[in-house]
Length: 533
Image 1 (cartoon, rainbow, N blue to C red):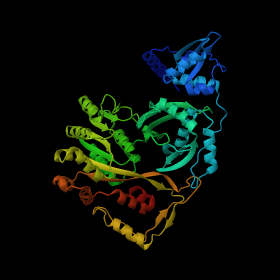
Image 2 (cartoon, rainbow, N blue to C red):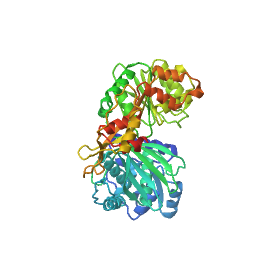
Image 3 (cartoon, rainbow, N blue to C red):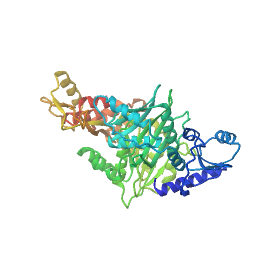
Image 4 (cartoon, one colour):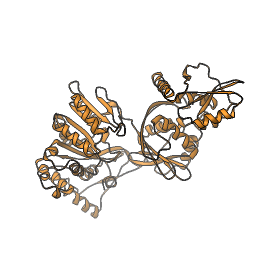
């Protein structure tokens, strides 16, 4: 941990101690920390969240944390009734430093996690055994470091009857990595809860964020930047950790994999000083990466950009980024959006449109001289537009403010070195013809009479035959045809009608885009159907 981060933590702990009316001590200022192993056992220190700071025949001075219970303090006073027992709050880092003094980390050899086409039971057991013998902070740092190496997007920790399963999502697919005992998982959850500011006993789903450095027992420094989502289940509190591993230099429209036509559409839209761009799709479809890439492209000295995010995932120099918590003072995206409009921004990014109030406020901003970028949860671009109309009502003025709705999914890219060619049979050829016949008239239909498709091969480096992910997209523009559909009576407008009109006006659907990528050998048909249906 850097000196600035440690200072911030100590100051925060001091403020907390004043609120609680308890003494505080900065353990970083104690040069020679003493170990008193005969006072309380290491197991008690870990469970009760106390550490002895100073002990003599007449006095015991305990360090406690902000989560140490009053019941524990009373029990210690009764237990050491022949001595004067006093308490002072110490920071979480200070507490853990004393824990390490009482139980120095063992020499641990961390095994690199590997993803194999068939489950490697020996490696799974070895990683599980390693995690069960190290401290909670080391577990977190190790899992994050391995997830980074494997280019995983998420770490899933799932409570089961006997143990807790840990899986990594790599290229959109989950892979089992290890399991933890329930006791070790409780320790890890305690550490996570403090770092992410969530509760281990909440009966509601929670969100948190961790951005700090950890030091493994090997001395390796690991930067942990995670979004934490927790939810109570039958056997305990499950956790999903989303890794923020995108660097600012990677945020560029050039790196989004847009086709020439898709890039032209995006360039034309964001050149306009007003209007709304919606990026839609489920969690994990790359919406945030697309939005940040647009923001980075727009980020110039002449333009004021403000973002409203829950949470702020990446920090972009030159952009005013405002964290939004909907449960904080009852101020959600809509309230904050109305406030920041007074700051005269040129471009606004709203992390997510979740309700009618936010939708209306964002569209009003798009109509009154601002370029508004946002995300929305929907299965397709036409479905997103239909849902947005449900939010705002059939209003041609509002609808005309939406310049582009871009839906996307991520599919796995074939490894060019190992992919295996094959010729589709007659039934599959017929299925492909049926999809290609629905292509927009502006798109040239490929000749598939002598088509070669590909299936994944296998190598030690890419055991599943895939390497990374690519996006399949559809871009619904507010064309004259789409606007005519929106002028119909509300009960006559449907998602299918909007999609049909958008295709007639030149829109490729995600299924069509995925099929064309499969024909070019970039992915498999099975992968496209798995993701799109």
